[in-house]
Image (cartoon, rainbow, N blue to C red; front, side, top):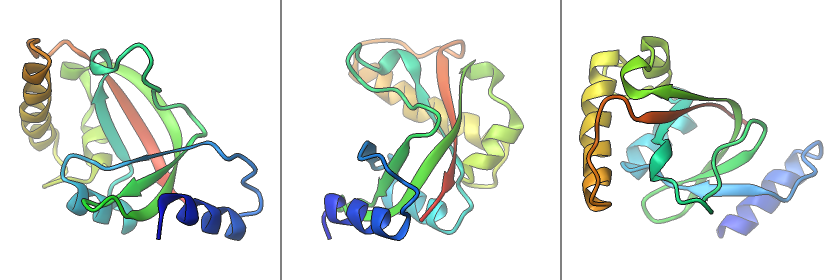
Amino acid sequence: MTVEEFWQQFKNSHPEVTTNDYDAYAFVDADALAHLVKIGRKTATTSALDLYDENDARPQVGEYSIILDSQNQPVCVTQTKVVETIPFDQVSAEHAYHEGEGDRTLAYWRDVHRRVFSSFYQQCNREFNEQISCLCEVFERVD
């Protein structure tokens, strides 16, 4: 099923949704993290604010997203509930828990995100530091 077909099927079963605007994306570890969203364990994500290009859309409260697996197949639909900009070194244990990964601790979250963000920054010829601004997004799986 294509992403557009998945979206139309979602809208057909949710007549209260009147928008045709949605984002579709896969996480870095696409299959594992899409599964965590689908089962309701992962209800948050984090991105590095200054790695967005000026024309890149940033997460917005109320928007819908289709979570994709590693084959770019739709897995589920989420709706963004909260978006906050927080320095990396101030991301809370609560947010780390809601990301649903590993043992759900802040230490695990920092270790994984430090490695992933460092790699992304290196690809952009930039240097990661623990004061970078993070976009911390909380979402709800709606289908």
